[in-house]
Image (cartoon, rainbow, N blue to C red):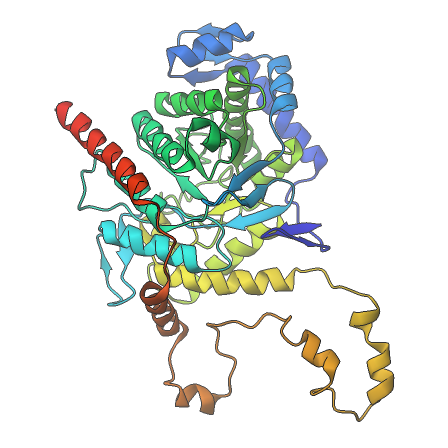
Length: 483
């Protein structure tokens, strides 16, 4: 059973690893946690873990199996995210898959000029607008790191823009713990209070953890803070096989999984039942030919997601990305395959749609193209409804071999059901030429321009906008005093 975009689909899914392989990696991770341990760079986190039964030797913390099993028994199987209006938008669990953008690209492939440049805050706003408008996109991320704001607190400016520009769920990233606190404070203002936001969260934090065997202080602080509030978190340790972990997929995944399990244990010790998602990418060999952290590599596809399914936990995946620098065949190849594998192996919250050049560049054109690819993939993997209406034996009997089905009422009832792309050109050459002979890249650029010209998001009340902006001003004043 594949589920995507909230629609049930009776269709086969793909699993990279079977039960036996997952069990072996799980057992190896337990041995790593108990015998070798993980470096935990936060005193409060160490105290909580030791209080729950772990052993500490300086930074190194060793966790026994029973603590892991207890945490897995209380961690929720689903993360539910709402839109700004309080309606369920994402039920992340099982094989239900949702897609969204990424965050903090250092460059933008400008859809107006075709040139690569450094992004500014208006690019964050435009990307949020495009993601909000695209029907196959389910959540919004900041897309770009704007260089025209204070780089120490750029994430506060991003969060303000996203809250004002989209009603879809938001996945945010902050470089420090204070940024996470400020982002949640903004969300609570929009929701009408901390309790209201906890009841219907419309944003969640993507926590970057140094690696499977190193838990950095900022990540641990965010994990504990969000767990205390009962808010969902995406706890994501990532390994680079051959660099900070074994070059083999199994060894890389086992050591990465040890860090994932530590995060689950910590969150559940802070608050049993605190929602947490695990990684759905990496866990395989790094590109040792280039020493570049590539976004689409064959060997890692589906490996960490298999472990997420083994634990029956929500998975934060990756798709719609490319390591290409231009909108070429590599771009289309990698974007399509990464979208398809994330769908087939059942990653739940799939980010980085529109990412290029190993995450150093983003493209709103690629967001638009990926939206069309997703429409195709969802139609291609949809279950086929077979009943009296769809078999249409009465229509076949009525019209026979030579009848005109085109104008029949049965056709009128169903002709809008197939997927028809608004971007992909299916016309004959003469029609394509008459319409300007434009490439898909050019059509995607026009789609982005049309969205930016026409799409309007329901604005927040003025008093809410003002309250959010005051937090940004407060954070700016705070960081200025740190000098």
